[in-house]
Amino acid sequence: SMQVTVEDVNGNQSIFAGTQAHKDTVAPSPPTSAAVAAGTSNVADSINMTNVDNVVVSVELPDDYKGTEQVTVTLTGGTTASATVLSPIYGGSILVNQLDASALADGTIAISVDVVDPAGNSVNFTGTPCMKDTAPPAAPTSIAIPSGTSNPANVINNQTETAVDVMVDYDNSMTGMETAILHMTGASGDRTSTVLAGPVPVPSGGGMATFSGVNAGRLDDGPISLAITITDAQFNEATFTGTSATKDTVGPLAPLTAHVWETSANPTNFINA
Image (tube, rainbow, N blue to C red; front, side, top):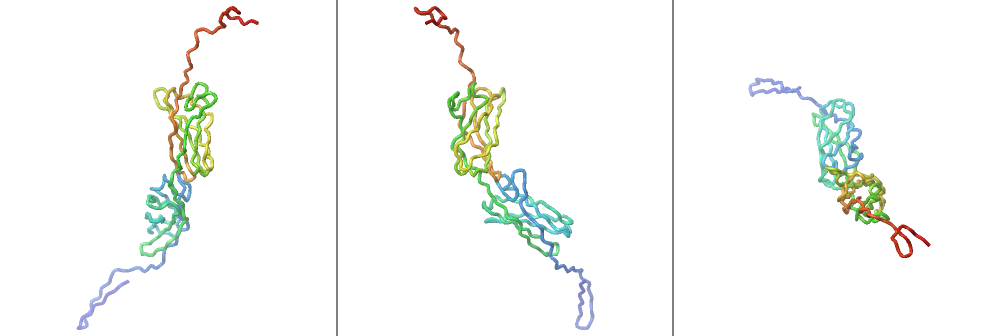
């Protein structure tokens, strides 16, 4: 409680009761964990090109929280990004989102949590560092249908349309942790259709690899576009366009006749000694 006594030179007093104050010097209990949560497009403890502008950090709070504490999560990597939420009563697991890490440098990102109660007491907790990697996979050197025993290069014909081979020359920066999906797109009736193949693993160190036996039967004759999407271990992905192909499955017109010609040595349609 607070009381103010005022006395003048003649000994007269006035007593005033002030506003009651509360002494609280106990800091909040620190969180027990804080880490970037796994999502639909990122693994745990990672920031990639899909979640970089909305990183979600999972924080575990002790059960003595009163629901009045301010919880601030800060990401640090060259610069900082932070977001603040109000704690739930009795603590527990909370998700702090809307953390925009776009301005942070790729590499190791530190995570810290500051908790402040209404009295201004505070505690700091260091969370699990995460890795920021927002670099997309490198582009292949080429994506094309190779020539084969039954087709010229970049051609799908009536002998190969249900078993098309597409050859990709991957960049040498590939680590072997990437996967690739082939997109083969063309007309199908009155609409555009895409045939997908994969995902397949990308060879470590890059080099040549083949999507084998792709069924392009549902695509109409005409131009066919090729593309692949490469996704790395951090879920960064990029799509690359290859060399266009032509589908032509119409055979040449059949001859009107075919027979053994008559000569001085044989009659028509006869082969003799």
